[in-house]
Length: 184
Image (cartoon, rainbow, N blue to C red; front, side, top):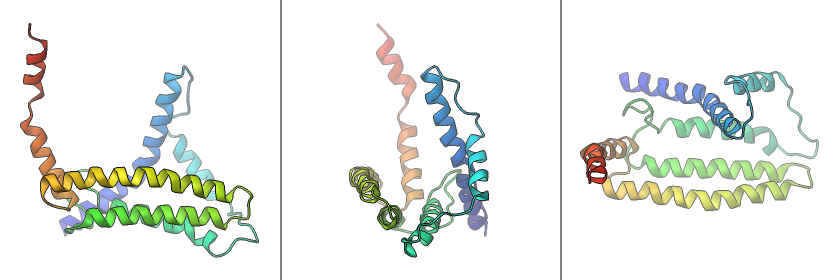
């Protein structure tokens, strides 16, 4: 029962904190460019404004345009159930969950590309092809990194990988390395 409660709180935490992180990154970029930037809570204001708006869907669009945003949101939340954010408890945890995470993210990319192709716009192919090109470059790199950690730790469970990686990083003492490089 504790696993379900903590896992649910972690998923809720990820959903609530992600707009803040997006705005914080944008604010830091603006400060580095010498601009003021948006307030920290701007993403929450944007979400509130967008939730009040009515959906505008082309008459030429099929049912895919109606269900794709929901599928993308649900798959994002579903992927968050595999991630141990605060501690090693996750809502969904089993051997091979790393492979399931990769497939869920690929399904999300597929839904985005399908949604872009379904729109009655001259730029539909351009947006979808750009999404697929970025995915074809990012996802194999992501998979390679994840599977390298899986081979090193001997498991494909994300919680076990992070726990084992944390132990390996704790064995490496950074302070002794700094003393060796700084001393004459």
